[in-house]
Length: 499
Image (cartoon, rainbow, N blue to C red):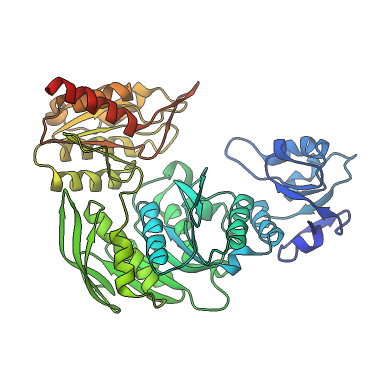
């Protein structure tokens, strides 16, 4: 436990009311989870506002409240809780959470990875290099968070600041020295990573995504850029190392703005860390690494040119600190396909791959990789999520129909929208001359079954959009649904028919 005054050491406050020597037992941003003695932070949301739940938090025994100036009127006149008035409740919450856990991010070498695509794979590859070099490591990201060998289920790509600081504190207690973290644009915009000092920042790429939240591409870029320019996210005892994908058109914005040392990587042109002699086939991805730390042949078990790019990012993010090059390459070569990231389902034919591609660029890259390794046709199954950027739907329809030999358009996570309405928007982007190669099946299970049933042994079936997810969200329910399980069942049925 710490006193409120201790927790406010780095917080800019407008006003405080009530005792500052009160002991704080915990931190909450959900009024339903407030326990006696907790601090409750009133966060703004897209559908509601935390100030509406101050009364419930007080009833549950909140000892302190963090509010905005326009939310003070919601504090009951009978409340004895101390009140902290701030302009930005999210920023204050992150700073308070870091102080509550004794600033764990300052005791770990943190590497943050941001970008539209590749974050999960790169964090896992960075982790693999560190582990090969004997480091005790942690990972925070979409699939899970891991403390050394202990795996915990994840919620958001980047957790809310109190949850993130608690995880980092667990890592410190477990002796973790290095942590790789996915840093989403939402997390940067909502200040979830405030209180973290990133020794390394990696930029992967910037393509269309999350415009339902950010509004336009420039706001989306600026959210990502914050990781590279905000002094509050920089290390205090050493220079920042910025790792930038030179192949991405947005890289110039990042290289121009980034503070600290700069390391670029590329699979197509000149950069500090490069791949030459790149070969992709059904067995994996091979290339020659050229870097300031030496040259080596690298043979990945991961498929796709984009994974060569991801591997370069991981090498650039780790080799600068003196890790042995042979150990680093050995670590990368041992990595198995990441869950839901161009992951093959079993070994049966047709070759069936599940991928998280849910953006136009992600779908295009996955289909281009499928084309490189397929011996026959490429058949793709995909949809688009509801309550998300609707503008990408016709774009993805055009990409899917152009790059695949056959498409099965289906549902992703419709959420509150009608699945058929989303599908209509996808189909609207398909060239009329290509519509004969596409079928519509709103039921995702039936869509996967239909794609595999029509495939020949040499074809490749790409199931895109949900990747690692084990659920499907509808307006009135959430059901268990795992593309990998459904595909495995469909492959077994198809195999039986061929006997």
